[in-house]
Length: 353
Length: 287
Ligand SMILES: Nc1ncnc2c1ncn2[C@@H]1O[C@H](COP(=O)(O)OP(=O)(O)O)[C@@H](O)[C@H]1O
Ligand SMILES: [Mg+2]
Image (cartoon, rainbow over all chains, first blue to last red; front, top):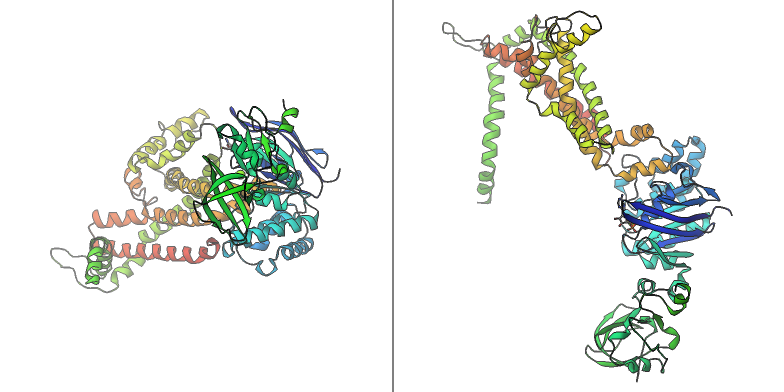
């Protein structure tokens, strides 16, 4: 069992509005679980219910096998990093970090030792005397991190901790947080709307939509086997192309892209998914017109139109194409994902009739 | 050319400031070096004689002491009360808007109206206080007529009026504090009182300084209740510096001595403002 976290059928309602709807998942000890989803899908609400800052309307939360659903936040064994960092502006960095240890009446010698250790882990040892306002965004983030580490709680909760940082710092902090989590053996729940963070950091991703779990599993599984059109469109950058089969006058053209892979006979409302990175330019196949080429350095994103539908394709290097040019596209049959009218795959269909 | 334009823009503000602040101040200081003029003996330069007279004037010392007690009686209590009320109404409680308004009402009433309400409270025998006390068998007392109770009575009324005003500033400051700070300390196990002492109160220091300066200035500015309630009496027991200046200037028509007293008041206020800024500066600016 260890320090695992279990959420069972968790619910949150405000009046008639259901923000979190019967969400269940388990985070194994010393693993990192990412709650992923668009803004407003209930990620923060779930995290705050785990922390005890928000009362659950239904369901239970277990930490290390203990039911903590109605227990005081301070006694649940969780630490939290807030999106806004929530540093105390009048206290120095050092005082901010040991604030909780003082509240918990931990002796001065141990406090100093833990402070030193935490400050070194996050690279703040030189800045302990400063006030938060005298730090950069990245450094403030580290203070918040150190405050969570120093409490030595088994479960660490993070609510979009990197969203206020610039892109470069963000990728640095991503790997740093992941390394710390592994090194300290923390059980971590990490909230983000950024699928790149989820893909790079998570052991397990819980993808949420409108307060419900859309799909959960290891990142590669969500990428390779999206169970729904929503997952397919959310995971991966650029996102998976989803062609509406109804709107294509001639299905033979699309079959040509895959050596005549058979398609269902009644494609009403069906969507045909293929990832931009699986699309290749070829001599024959699906015809398309080049609308735009975005050169990103290591590769390019090509925006294409087939009939009235848009497709994105990514290729390495600089694509030697001109706007308006006619090209042919091919992709392997195993790259195709078919979603039925309600957005689920054929395989999922049989599970959710 | 640019300069001319700049000066033109400044002129209206400068005229007001000079006409109504700087010139009167200098004029007052000037007047304080002259004797009281009459039709027989015109006013003449007498150097520091007025100041000597002021230091020898027992009433001056009396009103100064009164003012000190008045400040000590009103300032800490009204600030503590203001902060307590602000913390109370900053929480989600039923009828919050109503409670806020109730706390704030004394502030929006004109001074004269307030004084009249309290005059009714304090009236011997038939006033509210005496009527309530008579229920438990305590006989009537002339609150405003007894030198031992008159200053206290004024202090209580002033606190009643000021606390709601200061509450508004604290309420505004409290609403600017991010709620995550409380959440962060809650996760660490800090109770309400601990959070208040270690986080909220220090973060409210700029507001406290602002309120404190206002409270000090107000305690020297009080004049309107005294008109209605006591006229400074009995026997100057409730007389305060500004009312004494008013009396000197407009009842005794000794404008030169009133100017001298005014200079003393200005000096005291400037001294206190400076002291507050210097002493509290270090503890206030955390940004
Ligand atoms: N205190 C609240 N009262 C009512 N609705 C709320 C409250 N907090 C959040 N919500 C709603 O719940 C939904 C989920 O919010 P949140 O968990 O913050 O989303 P996320 O963190 O995924 O962006 C949103 O639609 C939001 O408007
Ligand atoms: Mg959120």
